[in-house]
Amino acid sequence: MKMFPHPTPSSQPDIPLIDNPFSPEILATAVSGLAVINGIVTITLESARCDHSKAHPGLERVVVGRIALTIPAAQALLTGMFDFLGQHEINPMISNGAGGKATCQ
Image (cartoon, rainbow, N blue to C red; front, side):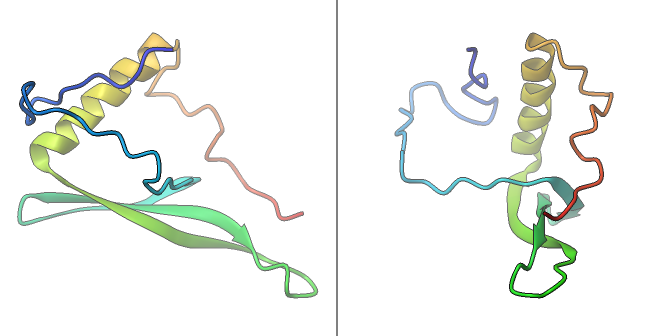
């Protein structure tokens, strides 16, 4: 499997990367918002969730995290995602239904 290309244009190749296997991982089912404030691009991530403590749980969209990037880092992420998806024969411009209607079971 080919990994996300690095280093990004904003990083320096002579700075070593220290992998942290304990860093948090976030699963998002959608992006609920984008903003640019003072040169920082913020991506708000959401996940479809059901509250099973209720008799008839309804589906809710819950914010699960935010990613804040400098503009060069956001550009590198976008370029890297396009390249990565293309290498895996996934067209980044066509929705494959992954963001489709979720159900609660």
